[in-house]
Length: 134
Image 1 (cartoon, rainbow, N blue to C red):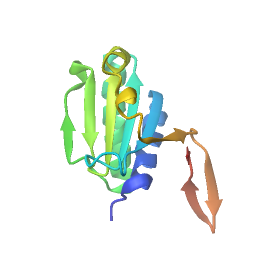
Image 2: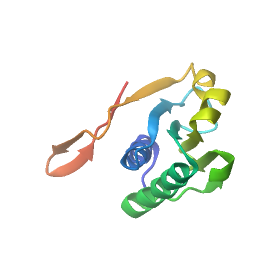
Image 3: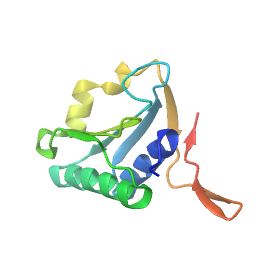
């Protein structure tokens, strides 16, 4: 069974970090938007970097967790692509587009989950990542 919600958001953010996406930010949109439960925004510095982030987030999350985006909106050449997992939307943007559209300002009412990077813990012999703080 594929993962959902916060666990899926964590997996997407971690995959983005592994391909060195920049400025990863995550918001809990529950109670703020009916569009999705979690929004992630990350940046790439070039077209090849954007393509790599898109490819690797989708590939890693599918291979490790069995979740595929139900829709991918945009192309890397447009400098803004959205991977839509229903519960989670991942916005992969070139830094110029990110500054211009300022999505962070649109979501000011949502709770931002602080992405702490590649931290992990082991509990009861099961490896769990715990990278969000509220």
